[in-house]
Image 1 (tube, rainbow, N blue to C red):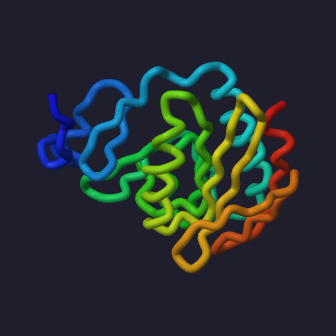
Image 2 (image 1 turned 180 degrees about the vertical axis):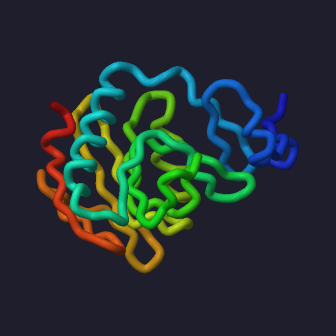
Image 3 (image 1 turned 90 degrees about the vertical axis):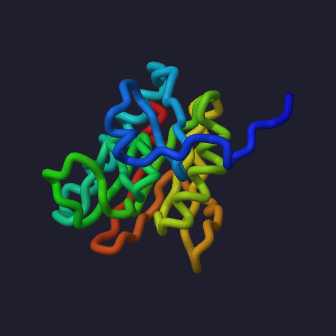
Length: 178
C-alpha cells in the first residue's frame, strides 16, 4: 500500500472545524486531534505560566495572558496554544483574531513533533515574536525570538525580559516548574 498523498486528504475550513466535537486544531486545512487530554503535570505547568504572565502584565492595559483559546489564523488554520500573550485584542472576543506576541507550548509525547515543526513554522510565518517550548520531563525551556522573519534560539536565563509592542516585562521561568 502506498503513502497517502497530501492532495488526496480532505481540506477543511473554519466552518467545518466549528462543528466538530472534541478538541481539534486545523492547520492548512488538515485536522489534528488534540487527544489525549493533557496530563496533570502539563496542566500544572500551564497554570503556573498563566499565573506568572498575569502578574507580569498587571500594569499593561493593552496586553493579556490567555489560556488555551482558539487563535483563528486564517479560514483553514485554527490552533489552540497552551498559553499566549495577546495585545490590543478585544477582551470580549470568543477567540483570538490578532497574532499573539508570545506563545507557550508545553511538550507532550503526542504533540512534540507538531510543536517543534508544523507549529514552529506556522508561528514564524505569522509573526509570533516569541515562541517558547516547555519540556516538563527534563524541566527545560527553549526560547525563540523572531528576528528578520526567522526564529533564533535565545540562551535564556531564569529571568527573561520580553519586549512587546506595547510594554515590556520580566518573567521568572524558574517558577513555572514548581
